[in-house]
Amino acid sequence: MALLAKLGLRPTARMVMATAAAASGAQAGVGPAAVSQAARPSRARGAAHAEAELELGGAQIVEMSLGAPVPGPRIGELMALMSADGSGALHRGNSAVGGQINRDGAALQQAFGALVGTEKRWRELYAGVQKMAHQSAVDVKKMEAQSAAVGDRSKQRPGAYVRDKSEAYLQAEAKVRDALREFGVREKALRKAVSALDEANLHKEIGAQTRVVDKTKADLEAEKKRIEVMKARLKGVLGIAIKVVKQDWKAVAEEATKFIGGQLIDEISSSRMAELKQQLEQATARLHSLEDMAMLQAIETASAGLEQAAASLDDGGQDLRDTLKSLNLARKTAVEALGESPRTQGAARMLERRGLMTQLMARTRTAVEQYRGEAPAVTAAIRKLEGLTRSYPEIVRKTPGIDPDYARSLTDTVARNRDALSGWALWIQQELNSCQAAVGQLDQTGPGSFVEHFDRVDDLLQAALEGR
Image (cartoon, rainbow, N blue to C red; front, side, top):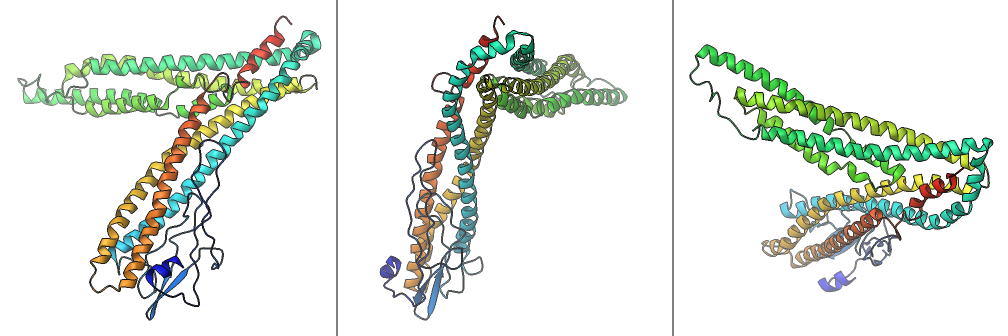
C-alpha cells in the first residue's frame, strides 16, 4: 500500500501485494549471512509469484516478478517494468531500455538463484566436515583405548592377518607419499626441459632464409623443404609434451587427498600445470615463425631432453595412480581385519572415517571453488543491471507525453530493483569472504584443525604393532 500512497492512488478491489521471497536464515558454517525476513503476500496466484494491480485512470498496471523468488538477502525477486496499459511487461518493441532491463533482470534472477544453490551445497558439505571433526575427538580416544587390544590380536599366529593387513596399509600410504614427491621432481625436470628450448633461442623470431640468401633458387626450395620437415618433427615432440601436461592431474591429486589428506597435495599443482601447458603451446606457435635450419637443429638437440622428461612425467602419473589403487585396497582390508573383533572395532572405525573425512574435505574444497568461480559473473551482471536502472529514471523523465503517475510507478519499480541488487551484491561478497575463511580452515593442519585427530591414526596404529 505504501506505493499507492506515494502515487496518490487508490487500491482496486483486486489489489494484491507483490511478494518478496522469505530471506534465508543464517547458514551453518563460516561467516554471517546478512538476511532479514521480507513481508509475506496477502494473496498469491498459484504456487508461483504474486501480482499487484495499480489503477491509473482507465488503465491498470500489473506488477509481476521477473522470475521465481530466490532465497538470500532481503528482497528475493526483481520486478518487471510494466506497460502503462497493463498489457504486459516492457519489451524491445515498446521500450528499448526498459525491455533490456527486463531481459537482463530475468536472466540475472535465474543466475542468482543458481548461485544460492551452489552456496547451499558447499555450506552443507562444510557442516559435514565440522560434524565429523567433532566426532573424531571421541573416536580417537576409543582407538587409543584399544591400542593394546590391536597389539594383542596381532601378536600370535592367529593375529598375523591383522598385523599383515595393518602393516600393508601403512606401507601403501608411504608409497603414495613417495609417488607424490617423485611426481613433483619429474614435473620440475619437464619445466627445465622447456626452459632449454628458450635457451636454444626459440623465443626469437628469425627472418626467412637469412642464412641462405646467396643460394640458388633450387637450393632455396630444398632448404625450405628441409626446414618444414624439421618443424613438423619438432612440433610432434612438443605435441607429445602438451598431451602429457593436459592430462587430468588435478583429479589424481584429489584422489590422493581422499586417502592421505592435503599435506602433500602441492606436489601436483593444477596452476603450475596450466602455466607449463601455456609455455608449451607458445613454443609450438613460435616454431611456425622459424625459418633458420641452424636454429632448428639447436632446438632439436634441446627437444631430446623435452621428450624424455615428458615420458618420465607420464610414467610418474601412472605410478601414482597404481599406488592409489593399492592404498584403496589396503585400507579396506585393514578396516575389515580390525573390525572383526569388538575389541578393535574402534580402531577400524577411526581408520575408515579418516578416509571418509579426507574424501569429504576434497568434495567441500571443490564445492567452495565452484562458488568462487560462479560468483564473479553474477556480480558483473548485477553491476551491469545497476547501471541500466541508474540511468532509467532520467530516460523516463525525458520521455515526452508520459503520464506522471505511470512515470512514478516505473521509477519506483526501478528503485526497488536497485535495492535488491545492492543486497545481492553485498551478500555475494560476504559469501566470498566466508569461502576464503573456509578454505583456510580446510587447509589447516595440526592442533585445532579438522584433521587434528585423524592425523594421529597412522602413528597410533604403528605404535600398537611395534614389537609384536
